[in-house]
Image 1 (cartoon, rainbow, N blue to C red):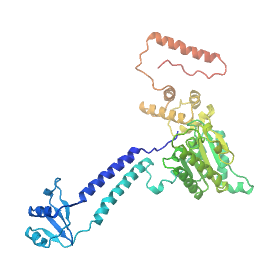
Image 2 (image 1 turned 120 degrees about the horizontal axis):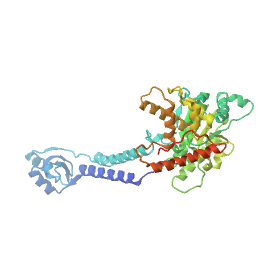
Image 3 (image 1 turned 135 degrees about the vertical axis):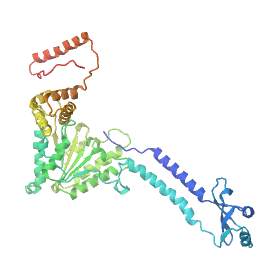
Image 4 (image 1 turned 90 degrees about the horizontal axis):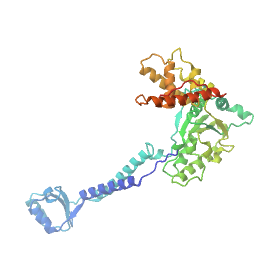
Amino acid sequence: MEKHHRFSIWYLLIGIWIVLLLQHSIVSMLAIRTIPYSEFLKLLKEGKVTEVAIGTNQIQGRLAGDASPTGRSILFRTVRVDPEIAKLLAQYNVTFKGEVESTFLRDLFSWVVPIFLFVGVWYFFMKRMTGQQPGFMTLGKSKAKVYMEDDLQVTFDHVAGVDEAKQELMEIVEFLKEPQKFAEIGGKMPKGVLLVGPPGTGKTLLAKAVAGESHVPFFSMSGSDFVEMFVGLGAARVRDLFDQAKKRAPCIIFIDELDALGKARGIGGAAGHDEREQTLNQLLVEMDGFDPTVGVVLMAATNRPEILDPALLRPGRFDRHILVDRPDKKGREEILKVHLKNVKVGDDVDVETIANMTPGMVGADLANLVNEAALLAVRRKKKKVTMKEFEEAVERVIAGLEKKNRLINEEERKIVAYHEVGHALVALSLPGTDPVKKISIIP
């Protein structure tokens, strides 16, 4: 699914309103009020003038707080200067000086500060909407997670149940280890390897295993991370990703959920599609532009290959497609053995039996099954996980929690039992069907 960070006009309106409010407050606070000379004399005699500065043709000063309706001292200015003003000021004990304060810096401050505040508010919202990027200059940077050689501890030993896919990928590992061997005879490795299969079958794990076996850096990024609200940002991230990869070659670039980025162009007309298509075009350009002998291998994963743009799948781009399908019974046994390595199990646990009970499950389902069984054992204060926990975990994963409080009368229970036995008898009577392991009428 495509992930877009959409900009709300309300953010902009709120920011503008805050800036205008602050500017009004600052300007009103620093504003200089022009008053007639007669009013100045009146305020002077009433003792409301606290200080003044006498210029050539104007007097500028400050009035006491009780002279303002707001109770705050205000600035004033009068455009006439009486030659006897010094005597008057001395008579009423008002401090004065002989030069008028310049208002240039004050006026500049009243306009510059709101602008900086507006930029700050805008930056705050942009930062939140672009995934907490640290600054403006990093918006076009790749968001890929980089795993160096020492960070990846995943190898083909951690991947089970997909022997055919591992066999295909061994060639990629050999190329990353010894690229000169392929260059000597003029051979070129595929620029792109597309892993296709249902969710949870281990596509991402396979890509990490290739990097772990090859001892090369691994750049991992989701297809939705390329597309943002800013036009051209996705294309900039694609360029930056390939630039980083070329500097650290040999390495692997892995794009998960490629269908979020590589959907066929021209489908739909919603906002954001132009940006996604520009990003896709840039990816196609980069795949055409980099030298395959450099040692950069592009891998991607998708569970919806039918919606990908045909330009991505042509020879010279993602020209090698590897199916990572649901494991068969033997594959499920191998996956279970991998996940059971760190789990204390009882002597009665039979991996083959668990594999028989889990047809159609993928690697992620089996990992969850093992974890559920371990949690059940801990809940029952057992030191080891027994076959009983695995059987209950299978039922829990497939059918959900047991509804112990649901009341079923005797007649309804009898009807359900006859119905389920009928299913079991039909399965036993027909050749080639899966064996019946358990019958239950518990809701």
